[in-house]
Image (cartoon, rainbow over the protein chains, first blue to last red):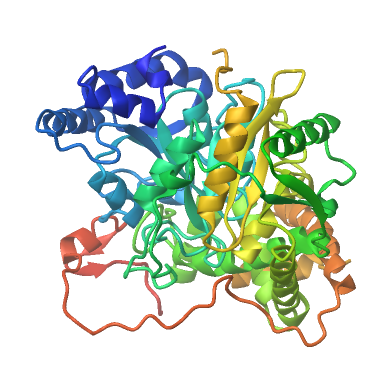
Length: 485
Length: 95
């Protein structure tokens, strides 16, 4: 095994026993980047020089015995979190030259924990997409099959972990943008409870749904990353002032006696038969570990997509009003007055999918349509949340497929927005209800494409998710299989 | 039809976007498909249901009004497409 193939906890052991240092690890990761980044294109910006400087600092800490949770570990950041002094584009032309004057809280926390940043990863423009094809900076390819999409919107962060172009990474999830690409790239991805991780410095898409979370090579690393990034932030008024447990304490608890809800509405027509088969395998595996699977009902599941594609664009149309060519980013040339500048800047600065969502959102919020769309969607959202509250009376966690199909071909859905939206059908309800979810590898199709299982739990019950995902991961034993790049 | 080309033009103006003619036609058709799909929501009985705006019960986050470090003028203007002195510069607003 080479160093870039290892997990955080494996590298930490080698660091503590002084067998390797951070510079060795960073060198190994950048050697891997030199070899395969050209074919995967997971990154928008590489921070190579900075990474080697930080690795040298980490090595001094290691020599002095000052080893923190992520000392010397190479971590990649989705290009949606602000990094002071480093380009942050959000995958958009309109921010193609934006250099934030401050760090996001999650970036500060990772720095404090000793992480070494490798670069900023590719994403769908403003996190609007399920395939990373809408980025202004080109498409990212799935490391398991280079003619297929890595999922989205955090496709670069998922592909970077899958292809060993970093050890772990940060993504953001508004309707599945961590869990869906994690599933399609065969890695672990968690969306924490709304309010668990500070959104300060996260470029806003839909503020009532956005949440930051980690991509890792295994569940133990997910717990380590969550320990670092979770917690209250006085600068972010929706972050919740609750104590954060030590998530690693949940790793070896087992799931004897767990009740696992299987929502009947999630096994719908159109779901790939190989995914259904993999889910049956997953159910059998967790029953073998002492858990019981029970059928539950989430009766408003069929409305999730429609609710989401009103609420998210409505919030986005408001959040994206700030991109007007005045204070930062792209400004169009030859504008005759202010209004002309706004229109020319926004029309040339945003891509088609972002414009489509701004249009839907503006329409849904416009006078005469507000009640029919936004208010109605917010009411159905309350019913969706209530479905989950009812479900927790019957089970501890819920198990579903993460996606209805494995990774699709590049270009397959890009001209059919509704088909693209349907790839998030199993992940959206989590964001609407604000609950946490994790996607963990659960098998491969006959063609060798990864399949993900999704576990969901009640608000602030990330520990339970780590507990069942860790037990399942050990049983599934898929970690040895790697993409052949 | 849920939305006409004229409405697309009006909404585009509200959103400060301009579209070429062929884009307007394509957007009108795609937005129609999407809005038709949204009609599904009318099947859900929401009588007496309070609209939900946040997933977690939020409380006002009060704090003392204290002076803290803030960004300098220079840093605040560092990303401006055009700046003069301590100001952002824009094309003329009034005739």
